[in-house]
Length: 330
Image 1 (cartoon, rainbow, N blue to C red):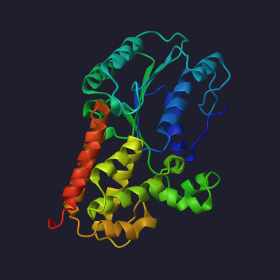
Image 2 (cartoon, helix red, strand yellow):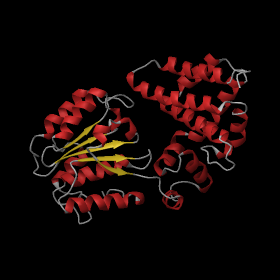
Image 3 (tube, helix red, strand yellow):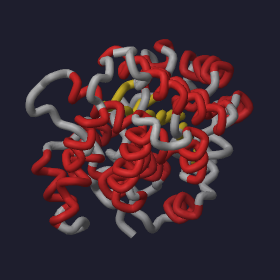
Image 4 (cartoon, rainbow, N blue to C red):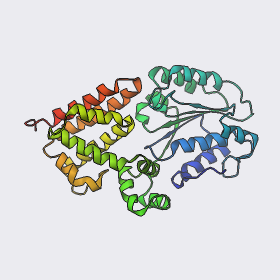
């Protein structure tokens, strides 16, 4: 089965293939950029190509040799994936130590040994320090691929030792062309807006109901602002939804409020169909306070990976919103 090629990744793929053909393949590659651009897909495509024994002229794995069959079965001895034990948790030092131990061994199939860390920013400090030693003394024919939507959360010492491939949001025309056969016309523009233009996130937004979540969350925040709802009942409602859905919904809503508060007349927002509701929600709110709440939300999101109490986190967000919207503080 052929690997799907995303059109916005073609340039990066060609550069990597050219580097490999010239014998200049980096020992460490950082795939970075916004979520929803298929960086993990690119990492798998590259990893499978590097362990393939009969790659095609375009650099892709053949898909039929013994190495490719092992790769697709997840049992190739020279291809290793390092990820958190649970989604949203940290990558611990033991996982990186195991990677380091394997990286110095000779490839069993005679090609490359490939290690993929996804998401790389999930490494805790000890794990990152352990990885740094591997980057400083790379093993021969060993390739490390780091996947990150938040490269700023990686230590600068790690970023500086990787060749970065920065994925950018494609042009609107390219995204519409790719999504045209996958989304109904009536949904396309709204899903593009709520996903920030990232094509794979637009598909995720449809599956997870981001537009409906935004509408629901804006209504809940308005009910809290006007003191029409019990905060504890609202928090209970938030607890019933996936934490990532709630956090991402909060970030989009707060970003929209900040953008609208900037005073720019035609500023782009995630929820253009809810502009009137957002303007009402943001009325009389302090611009700097919105920024501070947004920054605090990002920190809480990072802290969530350390097993903090979810209920306490959501209660804290509700209390901060109540403080921000308290009558007489504007």
